[in-house]
Length: 239
Image (cartoon, rainbow, N blue to C red; front, side, top):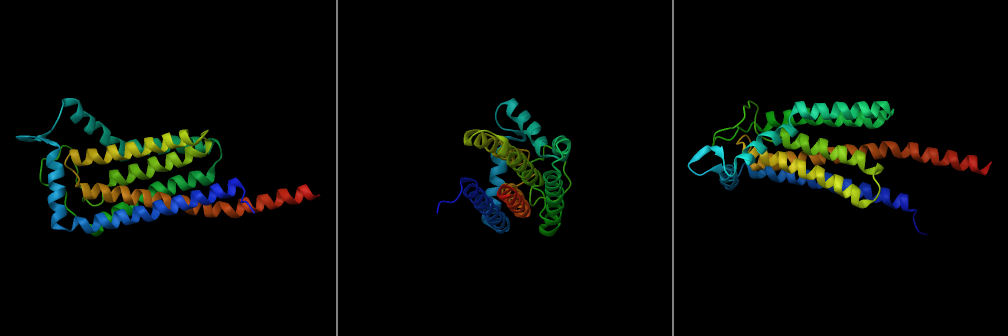
């Protein structure tokens, strides 16, 4: 007997989210182990220096616009910009009375921020000192909060928009934009000298895993309501 397309699609969606959650945790664990390796330390330092101008490590290599871009792009993963984005999205969800998704959004963002702070205290990794830092920063280095927050928020926004988009191409485009922005934010943290690449990779992995797990939980909590609704409609149809 062939399964209904909607049920097959839901199962594929759960499998994809589970794969992202496991993959993100594996990436985070691998980055955490690599961060303690002397070989990774060599790679981390070389990656930061590669972004700096020869003979002047206080300047980002390349055209002037690239350095300005890195300074501007990094703000996309910072608390002020992400808070503004979340506030606008929360207002939209509240206007449409989508309280469940609104709760998921707030829980995901707040929980992710608290978890990253706890991980920073646990790993207690100092900030890079291989080149001058081009922005002021005072917290610990591992994992990157900007990378984790951008991965979490952009992935979550893409996941919320995807069901309302027509066609797989449109959904793929939105997801691609989310990935591109998260990658750009992470790269800017290395270019500015405030994070090692392993910090950023760990942040990406954690942000994706955290969001995928919450989306899986949301699907599981929503499933009983949907089954009950289908039974109710079926019962009314038989009357």
